[in-house]
Image: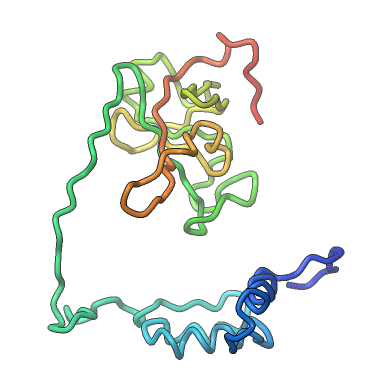
Length: 212
């Protein structure tokens, strides 16, 4: 990435490799010359990611496993067939009048919206995606200013009518983090819960409502 370097700031991979060398000086192979060398090693160690080494210029892209996953119904299993498991969903009680909030990451998966608008949807960062029926029951319209209130905080935004299941809301990340219980984790892997149960209020009814 072109541009001036700020102080001692370094790429993440350099920091991690420096820490690893200090912690485990007996482990070799951590002195990469740059990100191209890292991608070359990934392609070697993880055959499914072969092609990542060809990312050279802005706009380059690749699909792990090839241009089409499981093309011809051939899966990366010992017998070449797909295997499914039934995973029961945990109970999630949502009190009457409340909504389950899910967080959106924008165009880059597992990242955040970097601009004032999400380039994937064209929605602003303060958008609160809401089912049309739910909005009508709440007396709300697209563009109305609302406040989402959870047990952990509140978030001010504007209603955006969207095609989604009733009883659900979506807001962008990282704005939504003020609503989330950071101590709630999945018992199996310790993964944080990025959802929250909220009630919705009209912003005009709150004197502390300010759009971030």
